[in-house]
Each structure stands twice: as structure tokens, then as C-alpha cells.
Amino acid sequence: MAATVRRQQLSATVPLLLWAITVVTTFALTAGWQQGETTALHQQPSHDHVCYRTVQNPYVYFGSKTTYGAVAGNDLQTPADCRPMQVWMVSRHGTRYPSQEMIENLKKLHDFKTMITTESMLCPEDIATIRNWKFNLTSSFHYMLHRQGIEELKSLALRLKRLLPQIFNSTFDKNKYKFLTSHKKRAQDSATAFYQTLFNQNPDKDLPIVQTSDDRFYLYKCKQIGDADDEKNDNKIQEVKKFEDGPHMRSVVSRVSMVMGLKQNLSYENVSLMWESCKYDKAWFVQTRPAWCSVFTQADLEILEYAEDLKYYYSNGYGNPMGEIMGCPIVKDLMDNFRNLSMSKTGPQGVFYFGHTPNILSVVTRLGIGKDSTRLLSTNFEQMKNRKWRTSYIDPFASNIIAVLYKCKDTYKAMILLNEHAVPMGRDQCRLCPWKSIEDQFNPITSSNLSCNLNICKNSASFTSMSLVLVIVIITYTSNILVK
Ligand SMILES: *[C@@H]1O[C@H](CO)[C@@H](O)[C@H](O)[C@H]1NC(C)=O
Ligand SMILES: *[C@@H]1O[C@H](CO)[C@@H](O)[C@H](O)[C@H]1NC(C)=O
Ligand SMILES: *[C@@H]1O[C@H](CO)[C@@H](O)[C@H](O)[C@H]1NC(C)=O
Ligand SMILES: *[C@@H]1O[C@H](CO)[C@@H](O)[C@H](O)[C@H]1NC(C)=O
Ligand SMILES: *[C@@H]1O[C@H](CO)[C@@H](O)[C@H](O)[C@H]1NC(C)=O
Ligand SMILES: *[C@@H]1O[C@H](CO)[C@@H](O)[C@H](O)[C@H]1NC(C)=O
Picture 1 (cartoon, rainbow, N blue to C red):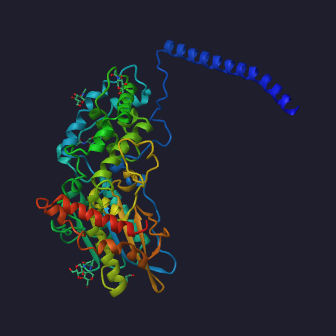
Picture 2 (cartoon, rainbow, N blue to C red):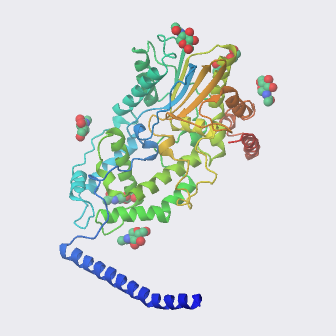
Picture 3 (cartoon, protein in one colour):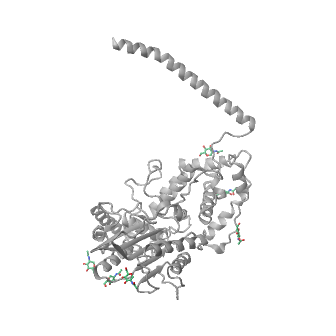
């Protein structure tokens, strides 16, 4: 009986439902048709391209050219009952100018300013900004530190001084404060800006420059890895190339071309130049809305960002077995410093290294930060949307790893920060951890004599694939001992 009633109700509902669907569909089609007509009437393509001038919170995650302030944290502090005994830091140089080659290439964008047609989807304000875009750098700016980069290092030094007053309780003394910089000018200038702010004086002589035999910080002997900070196109990584030639990137190129109102697709190289200009202008003038950013949608910027993440993943990150090997000497230096201070109470109060993207990534990969359980591939962009390996967060301009050793009552504790975000460490994911547990976690890696140096790259002639296999086996083995 009840079943019959239900069946009757159902048979009454079906025609009603069909009718409703018909009405809604017809309405939607009519509305769409009407809209199409209106568009044709006003010679305006129907578009959803937002006006960059007025959009709220534009996307600012630009890989290794992200501005520091967009991603930095503020977790550095001294816990109650603790006293900071030593701070150890590796910093990338601040915001810089492009390479000489890139400066020449960016000049080509002048040709595109007038190519925007009346079919463009850009709002008039964005078009005007592109038409007024100027670029007047000469090649003498090649890789120089930008004024914004100096500010980044100065403000980092001010924060350290304010948050760790016990560390900076004395004038400069080379036994208390160790500085080391790469031989490149942008890193030296970053170190100098940092030094000046800490000690309110100029260094009396040039800050120490890393020796080419120093495996902690001189990484150029491992060619591909050491050079990843430079804007060179040779030796493109396969996975990056595939992604650049793939459907996602083709959709970016075609969207940008359409947004500019072009009949033909631009080349990827030219679209890539627009992105470079957008990123640099945003890093140099943080508060502005750069001209060339407006041709991209957020979806485009996420795709371009992934190409950059792939590049660093395979050059200096977990995608390259050498990536983890490279970080051993520098992480060993951190461990030795903290161990010496906690055991024999000897050592400096501050250790400061100034270098480049490969230096930061060598520490990051050796410490196991930003490691995904799935490999980044040219084919799994969608699946990796929530990946941990994001260059924008790991390695913006002026990126840094800061480790602090605290004395808390009778025990030593340590905190490791990436861009001033405390990194959860070890099995219990502590942010302020007993020093002993950090030591136990990394000891198996750093105490291995075989792999804690870059001899594998130094003797690349005698380097056989057999020895790489051996090292990888050892690394994999030690990594598995560590519970992440
Ligand atoms: C380049 O242009 C900027 C702003 O457009 C201006 O501030 C700067 O002085 C110019 N530099 C040179 C070298 O002409
Ligand atoms: C500065 O602080 C360090 C570390 O807390 C301490 O060992 C040292 O004695 C202090 N030096 C001075 C001059 O106060
Ligand atoms: C532009 O590229 C897209 C994606 O590859 C393609 O579908 C489209 O046909 C191209 N347009 C022209 C005009 O070649
Ligand atoms: C765009 O880039 C290609 C190289 O990929 C170059 O040959 C071409 O001249 C560029 N287009 C314009 C209009 O500059
Ligand atoms: C740690 O102490 C040992 C023994 O005094 C010394 O040889 C070594 O250089 C120290 N390491 C660091 C990184 O300070
Ligand atoms: C590493 O080398 C040191 C001295 O060179 C030696 O004392 C130590 O036993 C070696 N450790 C291993 C694990 O081989």
C-alpha cells in the first residue's frame, strides 16, 4: 500500500521535473543567446578576464623571484626560561637585478606594448599601464643587488637584533660572529648590509669569502646544481621542457595571446619574458601592480610557478639524488656548531652565511623540508596542487634558514626556521625541540664519511655511475632510518 502511494507520487513528480528542466534550460539558452547578442552589439567580447588594476589580492607567488615579505613568517622568539646561545643562518642574497642577457631580452617587450588590439580583454587601465611601461636598465646592472634587496637584509638584521638581544650583546668580534659569503657581489653586498645593521658600523675589511675547496658553501663544483641561481637556458631539465611543451603551458600561451587580442599565438619565450618582467617589477617595487602582470590570470601564474618548481626540484631538490648529498657538509656544520657549544661551551654566538638559491636548497633538502610523498612530474600538475615543494615559499629573494640553540634551564633546545616559519622537526613534529633529538635525527647523515663531501663532483672525470649508485644506496638507507 505504502509502496503504491510512493510510486504514484513519483510518477507525478517526473513530468514536473522534466518540465522544470526544460524551463530552466530554455531560460539559460535564451539568456546566453541574449548575452551573445548584446556582446556583438557593443563590439565587446564576453570575458571574465579580471582588471588587474582593481582586483583584490593579486597573486604574488613568483617562484624564486617572490618578494620576501609575501611569504615570511614571524615565529622567531625566545621561549620562557630559555636563553639563546647561538644563532646559525644561511641566507640568499636579497632582491637583485636580472642578468645582462635577461636585461637585453626584456627590452624586446617594448615591441609588444603596441601589439594589443581592440579585441583585447584587458581593461583600459591595464592597457594604458602596459603602453606606459618603461625599461631603461643597462647591462651594467647585471646581477647587482637592488635597493629593495638591501632593505630585506637590513630588516632581517633588525628583527634578529630585537628578538635575540642576548646574541648581539657585544660589538663585532671575529671570534663571536662568523661571516662567510659567496664570491659574487650580490651576496657580499647582502652580507655587508646585514653586518652594518647588526653592528652599526662598516666591516673594517672585506667579509670573508668562501674558498673553492669549501664543500659547505662552494657548490659550483657540482655544475648543474651550483648554477641553478643563474638565468641560463642551456641544459634545460627534461621534465621542465616537457611541461613547457605540454597542454597546460600551451593554454597559458594561448590565453595570454587572446587576452592581448592577438590573432596568432605568441611564442612561449615571449610569454615567458612578460612573466619575468612582471616578477621583477613586483620584487623591485613591492607596492605596485606591474604592467605585464595584467596579461595573466591566476591559473596562468600557477602553471608558470609549477614550471619553476619542477626546475628546482630536479636541479637542487628531491628530484636529484645529488640534491640531498650536497647539503651534507653545510648541515654537518650546523650540527658541529651546536654540538660544540652544548658540550664544550665553546664557539661563536653567531654564524652567518650569504649565498644563493643552491645554498638554501641544499640545506632545505638535507633537512627534509618541503618533501612530498609523490614525485613532481610534468604530467601531474593537477594532482600536486597542494604540494609542499613550492619555490615561492622555500626560496624567495632573501630566503633564509635560521637555527637557534637555546639553553633552557638544564637542557639545550633548538629551533629551525625557514623564512622565519618554525619548521616542525622529527617524530613528534616539535618546533622547539630538545637539541639531543635533533642531533640524533641528523647524526646518521652527517657522520657518514663517505658522502659528507662533494668529492663526487670534484672528480667528475673519475666519477663513475657505480659510485653514484653506491652513494644513493647509502643516502636512501640513512634517510629511511630517519623518521620524517
Ligand atoms: C629608469 O626609470 C626609472 C623610473 O621609470 C627612473 O626612476 C630611473 O631614474 C631611470 N634610470 C635611468 C638610469 O635612467
Ligand atoms: C652575551 O650573551 C652570551 C650568550 O647568551 C653570553 O654567553 C655572554 O656572556 C654575553 N656577553 C656579554 C658581554 O654580556
Ligand atoms: C593557439 O594555441 C592553442 C593551444 O595550443 C590552440 O588550440 C589554438 O588553435 C592556437 N591558435 C592559433 C591561432 O594558432
Ligand atoms: C617572439 O619570440 C620569438 C622566439 O621564440 C622571436 O623569434 C619573435 O621575434 C618574437 N616575437 C616578437 C614580435 O618579437
Ligand atoms: C668543534 O670543535 C672541534 C674541537 O674543538 C673543532 O675542531 C671544530 O672546528 C669545531 N667545529 C665548529 C663548526 O665549530
Ligand atoms: C670517519 O672518519 C674519522 C676520521 O677521519 C674516523 O675517526 C671515523 O671512524 C670515520 N667514521 C666512519 C663512520 O667511518
